[in-house]
Amino acid sequence: MLSLNLPPFQAKIEIRNGKPFIFDMLRRRYVTLTPEERVRQYFVHFLTEHKGYPATLMANEVLLRLNGMNKRCDTVVYDRNLSPRMIIEYKAPDVEITQAVFDQIGRYNLVLRVDYLIVSNGIRHYCCKMDYGNRTYAFLTDIPTYDIL
Image (cartoon, rainbow, N blue to C red; front, side, top):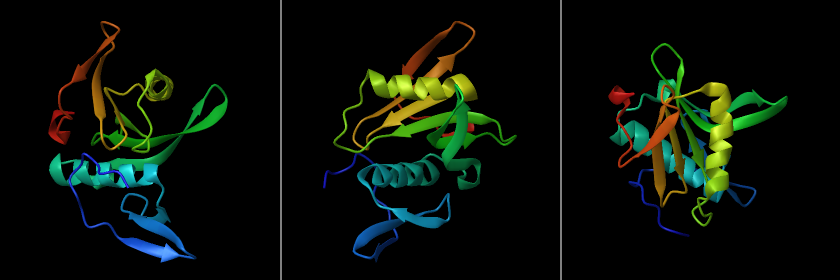
């Protein structure tokens, strides 16, 4: 198993019928522990424990409608008025982050129109801030704390 570029945390893991499950604090239930889910859980804990993101203002597997089809954002972060501010897309550690991954999160942002986009495979993390006025974006060197959103 590849080491992640994220702080460790005490994950709650159960084995059911020979398969591992991890507790998702946002969905408040155990979910199948896939490599991508491992990245999601580590990243969510990183945001809550190290960047000050309130778990109550985050949601995993957020359903949205795009071109008549149902899609799911991996994680959405909301402001205190419950407006979406950030979309996070996760990939498994062995999945390279390519333009196709950025295209995917960009399509989701056509619906949500957030200020920040993050893509992570647990090893490499990319965060960009949208500038809708100038129709551009800028990659940030660090993931912002919640109070900056």
